[in-house]
Length: 228
Image (cartoon, rainbow, N blue to C red; front, side, top):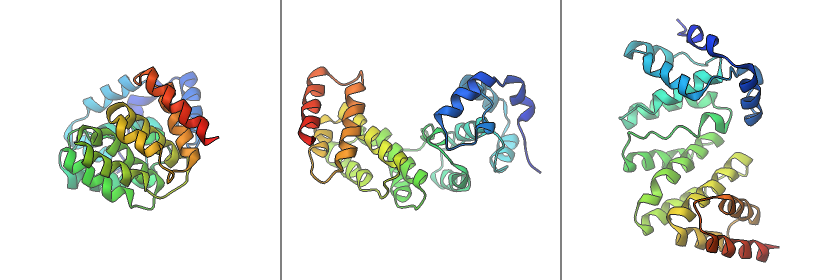
């Protein structure tokens, strides 16, 4: 029997916020958005008992994007990599946008476990699976020693796909590395192996970041001019 949260969600819907959120994720049908605030979704997720969580996670597909967000919040509670993998693979066919991937970080898995998962997802055919792999590397690799972090950066940048979501994920990844491992990021951006369009996208993100110092931004702007 399909487990539904409609009785909890529908009273909280906000049509103006739904319209705004739908514009952020045009690959998802706009009628799937209710416009519910994330804090309210977290409250709903926490209100579910173990049996309800299990029923909800196996009730796919969900009618509303907000249900997908709750689904992601529940996946983030997993502490076991095998259970996390199985649950995510069941949800993966229903991912239509970055809106449904970028909050899925499995914070309770160890770094080794999450990077193991990232390795397998980088090799999957689904573009959003590869985006997830890049996000996980972005979250954990900068905390590793430089040699290991660089290995994971290279794996992420070598991931197949010229889809916009993939290129944006790579640009975001490079920006995060510029914050935590600037030497590695600068070397990657100076490489002739990267697509110039990707380099420009990454530099644009870095220049817009408030966490990167002005001197580094000047160097990046110079690098961007050299591409022209």
